Image 1: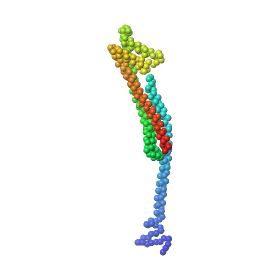
Image 2: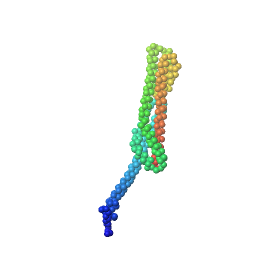
Image 3: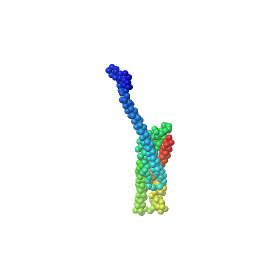
Image 4: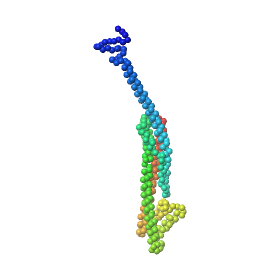
Length: 303
C-alpha cells in the first residue's frame, strides 16, 4: 500500500525511508547541522571581529609609538646641545664651574615600556614590502633608540666619576701649591729673624721677585689664583729657578712640591680632554640617532 509514510518491516524493526537516515530522523540531522553551522559561523565572525579589533589596537599603538618619538625629540636634542656646550667648556683654558645641564624631560622610558612583540607585529608582520628591508629598518630603528637610552642611563654616572677625579686632582694641586707658599713664608721669617740681607740669599731673592710679579697681576684685573695663570707665571718660573739652584736644599724641597702641582695640573687637563671628547661623541650620537629614527619611520610609513 502506498502512502506518504510507507512502513517496511524488517527483522522486527521498521524505518521510514522518507523521514530518517540510518535510524536518525531528518529533523535531528538538520538540527545538528544547523547547530554546527551556526557555531562555525559564530567562530568565524568572532575571529574576524578579533582580527579587526587587534588591527585597530595595533594601529592605535603605532600612532602612540610615533607620537612618543616625536615628543622625545626636543629633549634629546637639548641634551645633545648640553653635552656639546659642556665639551667645549672643558677645553677652555680658565677656571670655571664645570656644571653639566641635565634635561629632566630627556627619557626613553615610555617608549621602552611598549611591548616589543607588538612593535614587531606592527613593523614586520603588518607592513608590506621586502622582509629583509623591513628587518633592517626595524633593527636600525630600535638600535638607535637603544643608543639614546644607553646614553641617558650612563651620562650622569660618567659625569659623577669625572668630577670626583677632577676634585681629587684639584685638591692635590692646591695642597702642593700651598706647601710652596708656606716654604716661602718660612724662608722669609728665618732670614728676617736672623737679619740676613736679601742680597745675600739669591735663591730667595729671585723667588720673591717671581711671586711679586705673579701676585701683581691682580692689579691688572687678572685673577692670579687661576691655575692657568699660576702655572704660567708662578709654577713654571719657579721650576726653572729650582733647577738652576740644585745646590740649595730649599730649592730641592720647593721643586718637589712645584712638580706635584704641575703633575696635578696636567692630570686635570688630560681628564678634561678625555671627557670633552666623550661628551662630544655623546652629543653627536644623540643627534645622529634622532635623524636615523626619523628616517626609519618615514620608510615604514611609505610601505
